[in-house]
Every structure is written in structure tokens, then in C-alpha cells.
Length: 303
Image (cartoon, rainbow, N blue to C red; front, side, top):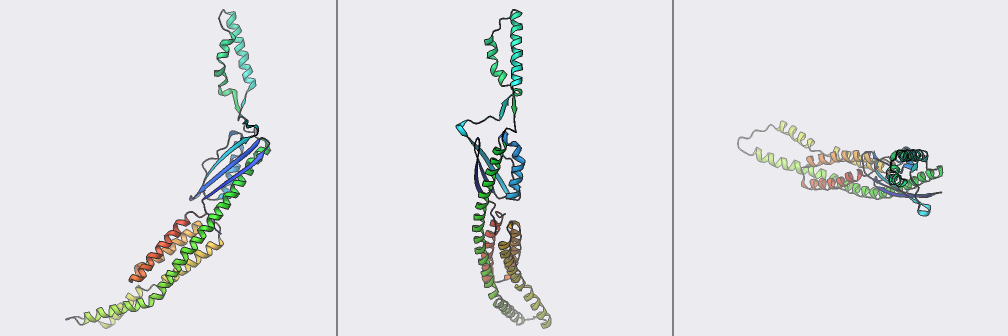
């Protein structure tokens, strides 16, 4: 069973104040990437727990997440709490300043103080951020929404993984069939090479002033034919294909391993092409490379 790194999932959970909705999207990446968890201030205390949970569940991929709230009655509670004690202190000081100014003959009225209210209210020190504002049930709802989104995203990844697995097996079967074609041609290929060399040698020996040592010639011919032997490459390619199938069936997080196996398959296929010295086999090698390239592309998106 394999999982795709591409995924999408949504989750919702209700609490006493309303409903929280979470959306998760993942795409392929070499490792786990989550740059930020966009939580409102009231949920900031949950960030590390959520981040750890996402990494444990998703393992690899670049993750994007969004969180939105729907509040009962349509009134969204503020993440900022007015520091009433400080505001009363400032208003008291303003009142004292007003009275002192009037005693000193300044023409200052209550309307002048009112005009300063927007500036006064906008002062940052009047507002406190209360990260513990979310209740336990509300925090639990956020975690449930993330859990549901993770479960749905995992189901999406699994479905994508099954489709990719079918494509893997299709491409692998094509490579294995081509390998069998080459295996069936290899003996005739060697005989054709021997015959061609023999004809060239006979023509050379019949040429004037040609001098050939028959024993040395036989040694060189054997060396040349052994150098062109492709039995080992065909056998190793067969073993790599079998290992790919076994890994595909047994391991869940197999993306990197499958990619390594595909690279080894590529080495054997390239060697077959360089040794072939036969246009029919070389055409099979080109087709193998095409199927293998599709496999390599897909392994990059497997968990």
C-alpha cells in the first residue's frame, strides 16, 4: 500500500460558541514543510500541539492549512481584552487635568476631552491579548477539526496512491515484457555478430599481404563476444523489477526506496543499450527508458 503526497482534506467541529472549520492541502516535497499554522490569537497555545500532530500523521510533503470560525449569533468574540483598570486610571487623570486647567483659567471643556477619546482608545497598552481565552471544549473542537481534516486528507492520499500503484504496475509490466523480448533475441544476436565478424575476417584474410595469427584471432573474438554479453544485465533487471513489486506491496512509506530501485533499473537498461549492437534490441531499450521515466516521475510524489 502506498500513499501519494498530494492530498486535500476538510474537517469541522462544533463547540459552545460556534463551529471551527479546517482545510488541509499537501503537495510533494523532500521532507515535511509547514511554515505556519494560521491560528487566531485565542488558539495560539495549540500551535505546537497541532504542528507536532500534523508532522506525525502526514510525515512528508508541503502542508498548507486554513482555519475559519462561525460564531453563534454572528458575533465574533474579540481576541483583544480592554484593560479597564488602566482606562479608568487614564480617565481619572484626564479629569484631574481638566479641573486643574479650569482652576488655572484655561478654557477646557468636556468636549475637548471627548475629541481625544479615539487617540486614547487606540493606545496599544489599553488592550491585552488573552491567549487563554478559548475554553477547554473550544480548544478540543479545534483539535477534532484538525483530526478530521487529517483523516480525510489521508483517505485522499490513499486513493491517489492506489491510482499511482496501478500505473506503476502497468509501466513495470511493459518493462518486463520488453526484457523478455530482448532475452528471446539475445542468442540470435550473438550468432549474427559471430557471422558478421567471420565474414569480415574472411574478406581480410583473402586480401593481399594479410597476416593473421589464428590463435590470437580466436582469443580476441572470444573477448569481444564476452564483452557484448548481456545476460547479467537482463538478470539484474529482472531482480530489480521483482524488488520493485515487493516494495510496492509491502511498504507504506516507500517513495524514496522505489526511486532508488528505479535508478538501479535505469543503470541496467542503459548498459543494455550500450552493449546491444542490435537495432531491434536498441528499440526495446528506448521503450524501456520511456516507461521507466514515467515511473521515476511518479515516485517523486509517493510518501
